[in-house]
Length: 396
Image (cartoon, rainbow, N blue to C red; front, side, top):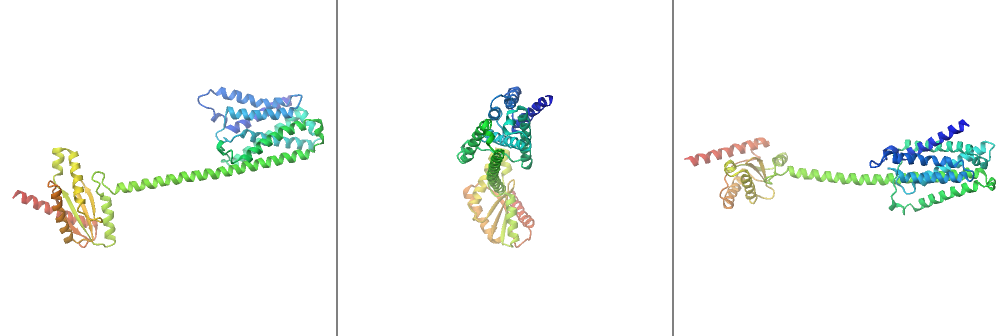
């Protein structure tokens, strides 16, 4: 008798353990609810199915009904994070009930008990229930160990696409309840035990096949969504890189090309041994304007100068801000003498645009040096000579 009581407690523990596996209990308790509000009813309803085994009439039927009710109530009390599939409670019910039938039928074959004698004896039924629940827990553990992603989410709007699966769930649930009623009757002794076992195995195989296929479908769907998200992220990153590159090629204030772009373009022309001239420009009066009128006026001065110079450049010419008030112009397919003529035209047009603009410039072409640094140094020296000559002329 003590063994039966211990077995009853152990069986209840198995039901609780299986329920805990189902929902990751303590991780799913909502923060705005007290712990006891979930745990107490959650554990209490798990004890109900085993109590039904000791009813004097139709114990198997009431056991299955109470187990189905327990599964449904648990879904309401603690909906799982992973299994949001509608009627997931019926999946648990059908798998366990099929295992239960198989265990009862197998014990009936290997012992002297008939199927009716087993289900009429609450302690024999308790042993069968214990074995079935152990098998159920092992099955779930093995499936989750083999594939941790063995979870699927089937939303309400997808129900139409899987209508045959839902019909199978409803029919299988009704079939188990009807079979439990029939097998509880005296006339059921004529039903072969092999039929009970075979039909339960078929039900298990169909359910397993459905679940595996569902899991594979949702894994593919998840992979497609992940690929789409990754592709979108890559496109955003690519656009961001293009934007950063574009920003790196322009000076933030004047919108002239940046020093980096100048170096890249001049290096490219040198690598291809293309002819080009480099004009090094030093804009005058910027310090005076900044000191007397403020840096905002000085910034406007720089921007207007760039605008004035650009109006006199070709589409393939490059105007870049080299630093502070220094600018460099690259003129492809242009010798030093041609660049000098064009620079003279630029000076005249800029005076017409704004007579306040004043700058010194030096020119060097790619025939005079092999490296960019050498070209810039040469043009810088000539610019400096021009500046010194202007100052001497102003003082004389």
